[in-house]
Length: 249
Ligand SMILES: Nc1ncnc2c1ncn2[C@@H]1O[C@H](COP(=O)(O)OP(=O)(O)O)[C@@H](O)[C@H]1O
Ligand SMILES: [Mg+2]
Image 1 (spheres, rainbow, N blue to C red):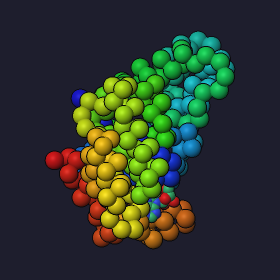
Image 2 (image 1 turned 120 degrees about the vertical axis):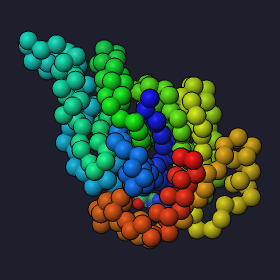
Image 3 (image 1 turned 90 degrees about the vertical axis):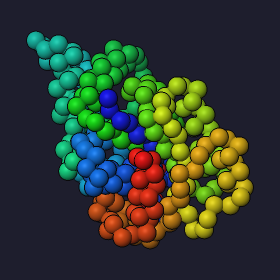
């Protein structure tokens, strides 16, 4: 069985950054091979990992819908080929980018092929890390629903914490999470306030820990340097690693 960890939370809170750091941690721990899934339509996990991406799964789905399947090839073989093209190899992990959301029209056939293949390729990986857009739609529609750990990322703002609680509730309603959900408060400048802790407590969302705001993370991003290349003695990297250690215990 693949052990899957999904990241969710309001936009800009640090899901992709933490997904990158999680992959860095897991590679260091030898928890490999990992299938990293970028399920955000504004895909940028590849930048955090320092990989370039040319094909996306969304592109494959679009091709199939447009009828670009070559004659003599079945749709499922075409889809399989396209998905394999969309897998980029990293060190200890592979990355697959879901890409653009669906346009108008029915994508049911393409989507169900996609789900089948994703389920199949997942079996080749003991670990899966999925970076999501703000909502839960991708998790509920595009992949198997057995998320072992859901990490809901928030910043210190009230709205973001409330969104975290809501996302966690939604994940519960959709029966996505098999294992546990945790909140991670990212980009902190001071310890979380009592009000913030109270919202989490009332919402039944356990806090796994906090990650401080750090200039280096921001600068790496600004200068197009992969987050995964941050030095391990960086305080935010260390704080994130401590949280991940707790999660895998
Ligand atoms: N702990 C942190 N300290 C400083 N900057 C951070 C931190 N975490 C994330 N960032 C920055 O915040 C921005 C949004 O992060 P990102 O991971 O893309 O968020 P999301 O995927 O949730 O939209 C990026 O510029 C990123 O470098
Ligand atoms: Mg992101």
